[in-house]
Length: 147
Image 1 (cartoon, rainbow, N blue to C red):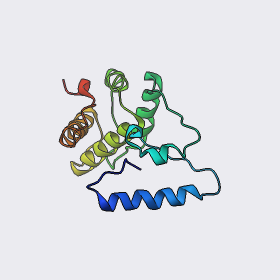
Image 2: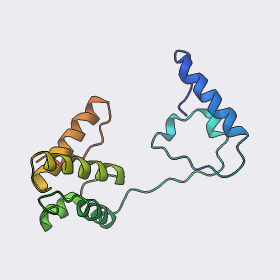
Image 3: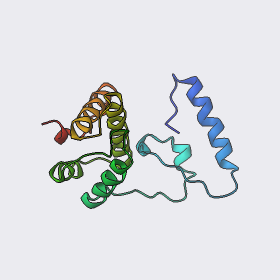
Image 4: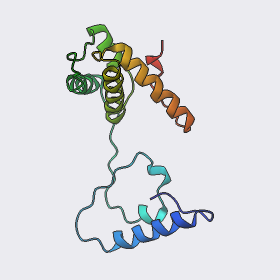
């Protein structure tokens, strides 16, 4: 769906095929992206309604953290995150996918150590996510996590 360029022939063909399918699609199609500014102009001209979601509220982030941490049970027991740690987590400007990914990575790390998920694993997961984001040129990270 990204803009076509003169040096990405395969990508250009994929966009052209997608446009052809989109042009004759009968029905309602929901496309989601966090890269809207890079959409090809021909795709943008075929979009009838654009909805931008606001950033999550602190309360909603808290609910997401609670939900994903409640699912992060290991053989050693449920996730153990103190109230002040949860308050710190909810203050981070993360989206739902980032919260889910950090919780999942923390769960995997805790399982590998035969331990329960705790704040230490969440910090390790967030640090890993931060390094990955920087490597791929994405600078918006949860800097408040790394104190």
